Image (cartoon, rainbow over all chains, first blue to last red; front, side, top):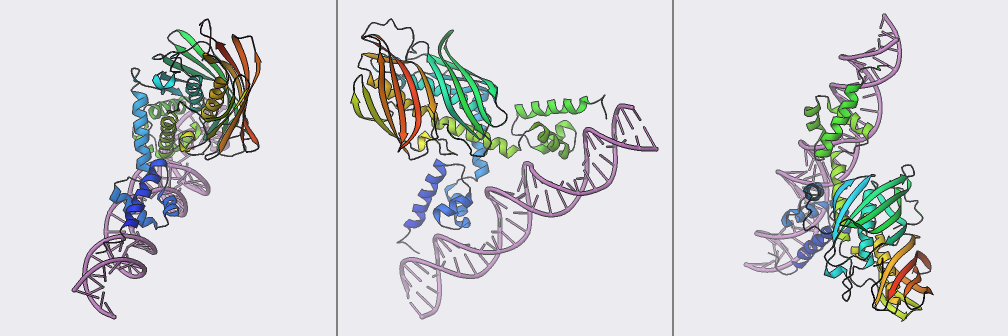
Length: 198
Length: 198
DNA sequence: ATCATTTTAGAACCTGGTACTAAAACAGTA
DNA sequence: TACTGTTTTAGTACCAGGTTCTAAAATGAT
């Protein structure tokens, strides 16, 4: 019974857990390169730790998000995409909380409103890589603590299957438009000849 | 050339699209039972319609929701201000960490880079209330995990003590400029006759 | 009858695994 | 040193859910 030097295994388990946590899309083979052990060891480790295989992990994530989008929870959801028609339009809801406002004025910081719109614009593009290239934005009125921002995004143009897409986003609080932005999004199916972009 | 009776195929395509839309987790084999055609026909149909295989669909959903969740927490402090001459210029540093990037590409999400610039532009204005009114921004190249963004902001114009201020921000990684933005900031000493602004 | 389209069939191959068997390496102890 | 128990590695067979390719059969219009 090896009692001393049992650390390596436990350490590896910790390492494995961390690796999978911050990239659930990693395959066993990729893990062997990181952990310097055989693929069988990786698989034994996963078993001991009760970590399902890659496909099962993806399936669970997909089912989870699918259920969330499907159930359209309009009540307490923050920054959630509630409707998404890829390459066409989308809607997301974001509630302004304490942590999003200037403490003195209770007015939302601009970058949160921008972030909601930007995320939605990027999410809309049905491509492997979609990054913001540029944007022209306007904050039409302040958004206050507790208000619910409903962002609606529409794809306005699309240069072929690669290149730029123009997305327009309008954010409302109730009937009032509080933000409007025109985003240019770079899209690419995998090739990486993008010069700029986020 | 069969010109009449071409409906069945188009109808099947419509049916197929609908079936997959309201259950993206369906396998080709399951679809054969629903559509009463062979599995090869299902696969030809998917190809023609550009519908990826089950696993790819699940993967995309999983990646999508993963990035979505990760993108939410945008900290109050975006970047560390290292130099500040009120109403003149300022510099802030922001390091791109795991939580700021797309998991697959390790490229920073645009709104973090925007947030750093926006925060700095607002911080620069020596007023009780300073809110972003509009911005015209350009992402010049992708910023990657681990890179340090150095944002430099300059006040370009100032309409009296109240009104609008124009602030230009340049963000660099090393020598390279990665972002450029022109911000219009509303400023006010307390009165709140601001029509727009964040 | 003939020709194009559409559908079906089948085999080879792929990824990312599971399940199982078995050998080898390692560590501790008698 | 030899024995023992754990840990690691290797290798095979098998699986789902496909892709890719070739080829035959069915269908329908002229």
